[in-house]
Image (cartoon, rainbow, N blue to C red; front, side, top):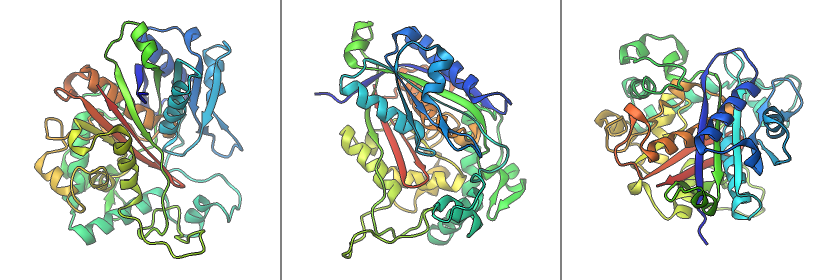
Length: 398
């Protein structure tokens, strides 16, 4: 039995700082995806929402929120929270429902209206919450731990500030061509170097912003796609949502402990947690890095993008900067990465961003990405990491 499902529709609401409800962004993205699929909302049998966390509010709202916004019609509803991996986990939940025969048409939606500045935990004392601990005990805001990763790369692999800046230059050039991106202008390495230091060695232009935005997908069974006359749709072939293994020899914040829950000694696993995310996706899809036409990775900072090159197998450990220097990951390069412009051009709208990555793969694999099109694109991978051990990678093929 094939594990493929079809992507019949992809839609987004432009990202920025619009000052409106996240529901409006999600509804607009959902309607765009339905129009793209040529389907009516009443034909959707299930809706899966990537949860939006309301700062200071003791709850998460998504799936039913969007179902109500589109108009109650009896569809099955699911809500998924997995921090920055929420969108990919929502795709995974939709795929499971389709393959289980519970629905032929599933709408996946994620949207957010992010606060200004860096993300912070809700108020109150929660000493058993690792996110609270890393802010209150370590003072490790997101930019602080992005900077720790950058320093680690500089110390271990010889990466330079110029290498980091070139990632921003590359992604800004792609974002310029994306009508949904928040930042649509070219950036020079000199402008990156001249921007304010946020967490040394990273400058303001090395770090992604927080944004408002939305993204949606219409996913269907292959039989349903064929019944609509779509013989060769973009297909999702693998969804990886693996967790870390102990012991962890390289710490990932906000998890600041490596203790195992088992009573016996455990040998270190081969590779990092992030590399295991992509490896599981490749194994499920039956392909590898050499089969890729492009990739969308989670560039919270310029330095972290370089690390993802290694984690998804585009090069060996410590060789990420070399790919940027050679232009291999730029538009027109050997293996373009973040053809959408990445978070560098969009900013973070947490529940939507992993869905937006799949939108970009869909348009690239269809050959409809316009000026940023990768010629002959046939396979792509997305990769990101949510806090608290939420890994995600999605492989799409044509």
